[in-house]
Image (cartoon, rainbow, N blue to C red; front, side, top):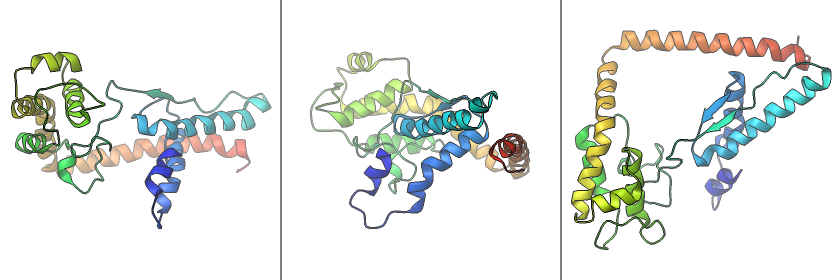
Length: 227
């Protein structure tokens, strides 16, 4: 797993969770017999493990015994934005586990917080708004983020802001993000106040998930010899 190699490189201590994560992810996918899984580019290899395990189980315990395959082979679902990079380092993906809150946009961020994070986002000292991932990766990352929240392509964004300075461009980006994230953050804040409703949703979700999981396990156990 390339992600395990990358994250463990140069470290004397490697957490078990980093090693076992791909297997747990595959278990979650197969337990509910998912047919499609939305992932970013960094998770494609993990999903490939789930596909391999599904194929191997189907072959060993099903098709070789004349039975119908049990597990669907989960397909990759990509959005146009396959990987969103950090606001502080265009070489790192945006992550909720990053200790720097200003490196990411959270769905719970207020419009003011989003605007502040975007204004502080790393760019460069070169004049002009130009989409050039090779020579201007930080600015290009922001342009790609802008594109993800609008119907504009990176080249269209570049043309739209050719007469603007960096601050003006960043404000337009913040406005585009807030048009989507703003209503979500308001909804989150309102839901936090209704703990009775949240508990109900959690209980219903747990019940539905458990029923689906038990259904899958009831089919798996006799196939592998656990009666």
